[in-house]
Amino acid sequence: MACRTARDAAKADLKRQLLAFNVRRSIATHILSQLQIPGASDFGASVAHHPATRPETPAHDLGQSTASIPEVNQAAETKPIEPLYMSSQRELEDFFRDIRPPYEDKETEDNWRIREANVMKMRRLLRGNAPQEFHQVLISGFKNMLDGILKVVNSLRTTMSTAGCQLVQDLAMTLGPGLDSMVEILLQGLEKMSAATKHIAAQNADKTVDTIFARVSYHQKLMQHIWLAVQDKNVQPRQFSSGWLKTILNRQALNKAQFEHSGGVEVAEKTIKKGLADANPKVRENMRGTYWTFAQIWPDRAERYVDYDLF
Image (cartoon, rainbow, N blue to C red; front, side, top):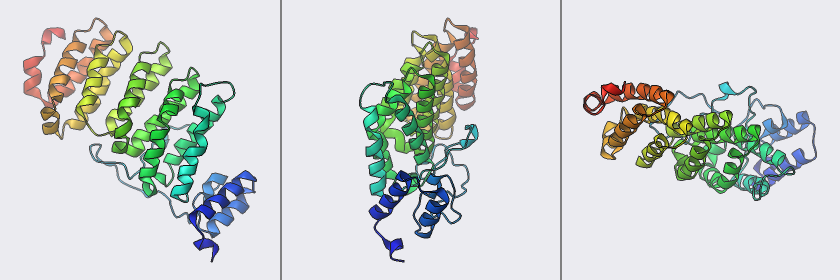
């Protein structure tokens, strides 16, 4: 009984030691479950009476804060990702401290595998108890890791870059508005990546930016990013801009007053006009769909401002 009331630091140390010495998973999970220490699934098996299992929750409106409820979609994963549980705030702080060094310099043959493995650990972390139980420490940890995460996202190794984009998508889906303080830095890197000549890199960037727009708090700066994208000299960002705008329009349909007051409607109008007049037929085609979304929400403005000759 005394072990169950041990300090969190001692419990965390015990779990690290079990992992370090490769204790047989059946033994390790039994020990952790008896001591009521989160993290038994780290050894490859789940514990029936885990104290931090994720509850079943209904879908939430995208305009509301989703910071306290992980909504990472594992359906798209080819293999389910095991959650990584933390016993204490101290253990979470140690986690971020331990994984940070490999990202401090340039990517090399010596560190890229470690970086990729750590990305998976961070994705597992988002599926564990940390988003609910240690929310602020988690956000602070990822904020300090932002430079390293962007290095992974912009890696020339396709699998590495893809893993980085998946991590950012998980962050947006799990933290929601909790990601607001990191949005500007993430968007700057991802929008540059959306212009990449490598098709898969551009597609990954497109999906990641769209996921961010769907989850973080609305701000006029988001519209400015879209306006810049529709003017980009590269065709991919111009193509993607219509989808990003449609995502924001759908989110703001039930909050029109804020969108109108912030000048969002005016930016949306000029973005649509720009896209409909683009020299590239794919850009024009994509923007037509966005125009009709806009027209359903602001029919009078759509009729007034859009030249049907552009169709």
